[in-house]
Image 1: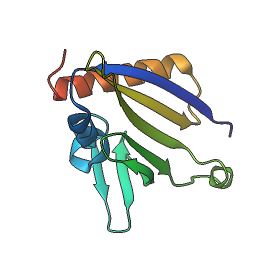
Image 2: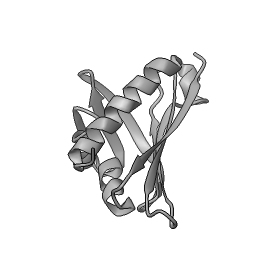
Image 3: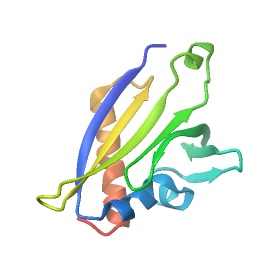
Image 4: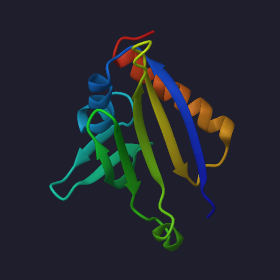
Length: 132
C-alpha cells in the first residue's frame, strides 16, 4: 500500500521541555494523543486509539527536540517501508515561541482528513497544557 507523508507545524507558547514530556512519555501521550500508551523494557510502545493497539519503537530520540515512533509492520510491504510518526520541536530564539512539527507517514492519504485530525489533536494538547 502506498504511503503518504503529511507534515504540519503548530505554534506553542510552552517551553520545549514541557512539550517534550507530552510527546515522549506514556503519561503525556495518553493525555492528548491516544486512549492509552504503554512501553516495555524492550522499548516496544503500545499506542491505543479507536480501541486498537498500534505497536511501535522509538527510532530517534533527542531530548527536548525530537522523537520518532516507527510502527511495527502490519503487512509484508510495511517491512520495507514502515509507517512512522515524528514530533520535532523547534524554538525561535527571536520570539521565544516553540513550534511542534508533525510528520505522519502512513497509509492514510486524505490530506484534508489528516489536517482535521491533527488540528483536533493539537487542540487537545494545547488544552492539556493550558494554551488557547
